Length: 436
Ligand SMILES: Cc1ncc(COP(=O)(O)O)c(C=O)c1O
Image (cartoon, rainbow, N blue to C red; front, side):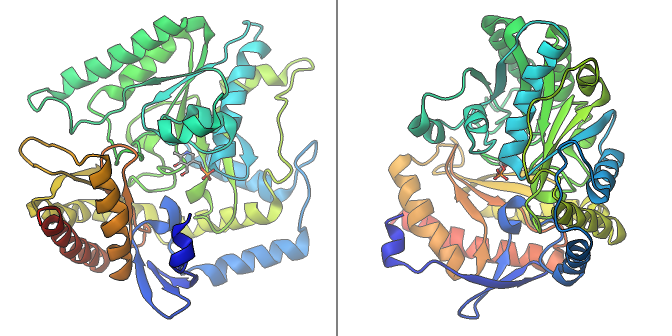
């Protein structure tokens, strides 16, 4: 934070499509969609604003505690119609962390409501990011984020993520999947399966750099959860609402989760709204006798936020935003693949409009940069230079050093080319600096 004493904080004053403008009139291509979240881009403010204003006139606020209002009901039905399988029950919250927090609490209470005793442990993956509130933070697999706030909420077990790049090159998909599932199985067994309530994972893990699952992975995770009676939660805070070229990653990979967490793309971040989506089976025990899910948030399903989210979904359907990602994802991948010609780029991975470029010191050995090198390369050079060149993307070293690329879902070939052109120049310059 001390850096802000000597540098100005960029003040972003307006946006349109995939572009932003700061207080000095400088333009940026936002290749990160805010924070992986402005799925429809910045150009729909008028239309969404009208929906918000209409709701303000009709009913600016009322609670969903023991009451309901039309927009929350309509939004719940709309989302339930889009989510796969029996994911039909929504609990609204104000963002992704609250969604993860609420999913864990729901999973914990589910077993009690069924009279099955207590299960409280959660399983997530190393380096995964799931939010900042104490429960969600405890689920995070990023040691640097966890350590300053310990002791955390007991107990979370972390298993291997699907980082393929640093595995033996001759390993097949089948072998990699078996290796990962064995780790998951053993971790659950060691914890005591009847103490574990939930396995929570992103369809494609963001932190560490767009780790896609190997063939058979999700089928195996589902089987292990079923074997031990554990609930599976897909954290779709980033992957939901089109980022992977389908409405949800769960649909794309046939994950069949019992719970799903959503936020960012639900409103394209035009409003602060998220939700936990649960299957009918999961909510059934709460509907009996005097049982209840003892959890609630004042702003959950706020009428204005719900109206904004409804309008966002209407726009996404009308303007075929998800179809656009599905139709252009191959050309996006091909365009980004040009970066593999650079000596500093070891890997370009991801899917849909969700990518990471991993930076290496040596392409043949896949040797990474050490901590000090990352610090000077990413924070000292890449981030400021990309910003200077008007490209917003994220240099991240929560795992190995990567540049994350996740543009608004309305981006097209012109933006793909612009991303590669600027990134190409800056990464070429980075390589000469490393070898000076
Ligand atoms: C996968 C995932 N889960 C949860 C969160 C937390 O969401 P929020 O920042 O809205 O609290 C994030 C945020 O980036 C996320 O990427």
